[in-house]
Length: 129
Image 1 (cartoon, rainbow, N blue to C red):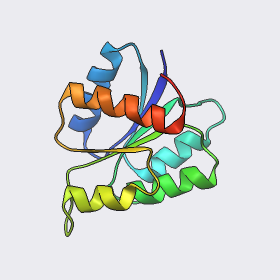
Image 2 (cartoon, rainbow, N blue to C red; image 1 turned 180 degrees about the vertical axis):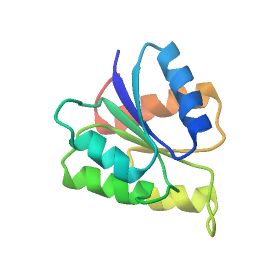
Image 3 (cartoon, helix red, strand yellow; image 1 turned 90 degrees about the vertical axis):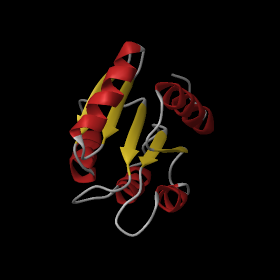
Image 4 (cartoon, rainbow, N blue to C red; image 1 turned 90 degrees about the horizontal axis):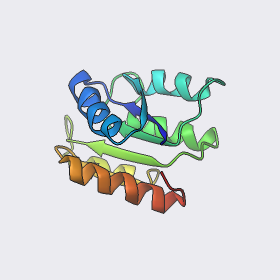
């Protein structure tokens, strides 16, 4: 199927997303934060068909990461996910991300909602997984 990069500082979120998406036949790679994700995307040996990123993360947050993706001319559709943070709720955080993400999804979400969000993000980017 496709190769997807999951970027989230919480291991349980990465594992959950991995389980759902691997059941669909996708190959999954993970990064714990935006800094690690930037290094992974810049690696010449890996190309991603989609990127799913949290917004609130240490070191480099999701918005900074998505901005870096634009600078790197990444063509992979980006799905931004968030459950909120210190001073903003999930809707505020995802609202800020909506300018750089192809689609947004509020945590917690069901597997069905994730499948739909992946589909919509790809349609918004004009690709198909």
